[in-house]
Length: 481
Ligand code: C2O
Ligand code: CU
Image 1 (tube, rainbow, N blue to C red):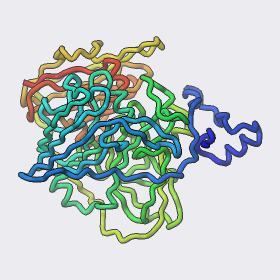
Image 2 (cartoon, rainbow, N blue to C red):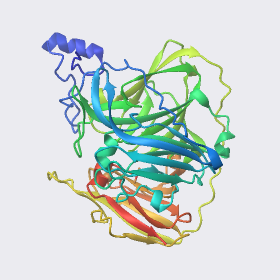
Image 3 (cartoon, rainbow, N blue to C red):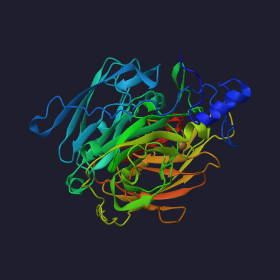
Image 4 (spheres, rainbow, N blue to C red):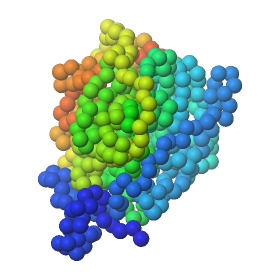
């Protein structure tokens, strides 16, 4: 029997039992402005289950310079909390889905078999992909059917991911598990002496509403208070006292995270959505909105074997006792380390002269109405409408504004990796100095990005990647011709 004792602070739990005699009572009062503790929050003692590495998917064939994979989307159960089975939706039964490792110049073909009872459309997030293979909202695979996606891998190295994008149900499908990482490498990245092999660790982080009856989805739910890494709530991760390269993905539907080590010590961010940053960025905190990625080197040699350090989260709403930590690194052995982080990671090509400028606004109903909707340029998503006509070959500046006073958003464009030019008129921080496909916008913020549309023609969507918002309408279509 799993008790419903709160995660965290065993000392506080004990104190509470002493005072109230009931370990079920939430122990901390959430700060003003935060939501109350999740009434259904589970019962897990943190750091009791190991964090799995994602399964690296093996191709079914590699002939002709093409890696061919087969994946089956199917319902499964996952033990997110120890002893509690959650009903989830998966690629190949894995929660999250298997990891694909791809190489520039070597195409990947994935046959996706939909054995769910809902439609699905698989999108390679951040991928430079032809429109018909982009996993568009209306290009769904019906239950029982299959579809083959072609990924040319013509773009430079990048930390991509794949996830469902079926119109209006992407939010629920992704929440229930339909996502996985796709790491594309190239010779630029491979030439660097960064940690590799077992010291290159993908971690997909998210939140969810999980209780003793399993995982729950409600649109716009603010009770997603359980933090999950690679499918496990509050896992521990055994590491050696040396450098690791950690490929962080925030695959939450909505949560903004700010990740850091509990002792405030340094992490070295070396990459973002579209691959390596030009220069390493030494920092104690990594901000990550939903769908963003950060490639981070952590040097555990500063810790003694036998010690531990918690990866904390200080971003997003919720009871800090629940959402304030993600996982614990346990330093369990020493290991040789010939890796290092060079001072120069890559050179980005200079930005071309922009040939067009546009403005895009993001806004959602935030007056507390029961059925809020979310808009781009004050319009709900209509898959039949083209919202922006882009000339093929153009390099454009898009000014994106969050018009909300309270709600956060972010902005994701399909097909391209863009550059962040400025945020509220200021130069972007070093973590945003590389190639990006998703950029965060706090209330009232304005961000300018520049994207060049010279790879594929056709219709692609752009949207807020807080998927509850895109499902509420915050999505639009650009046509490149
Ligand atoms: Cu991560 Cu439209 O997608
Ligand atoms: Cu949004």
